[in-house]
Image (cartoon, rainbow, N blue to C red; front, side, top):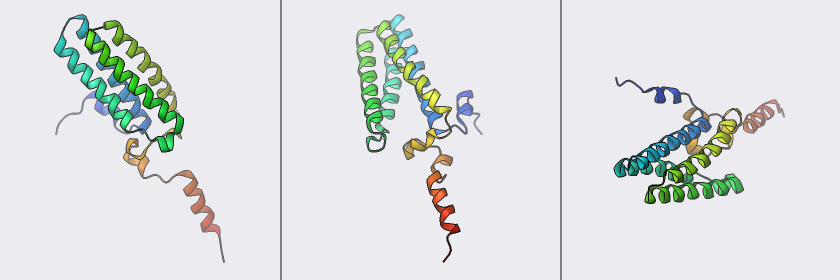
Length: 155
């Protein structure tokens, strides 16, 4: 049996929102690697780190549900597109400052998600594919209340 890394172990039992925070952490780690690679003029290392960060932005953007999230989803979509563009621009010119600017932006939004992660009801607004297996199969509170009300009804 293969041993799990510390990062993998820390995600066992995580909620969907906590997993989003973990994705932001991974993007930030890769952006730091890209900045370090740019500083060292390591083009291959920079490209690998940039690809990983950009893949995370694409993944997060692809999971947005404008039909459910409305303006918040549209704003996040714009944010991910901007981070994607800024990351590619920083990579293209090998700009450490450009990567640091992206890191600052991503860190700000990550902190907002970290606050949301502390709210036990936050997972209920996530799209189904971003919920953990346990969150997917928990009946919504209003459905549980309707079932309780229906069971008290008598003819």
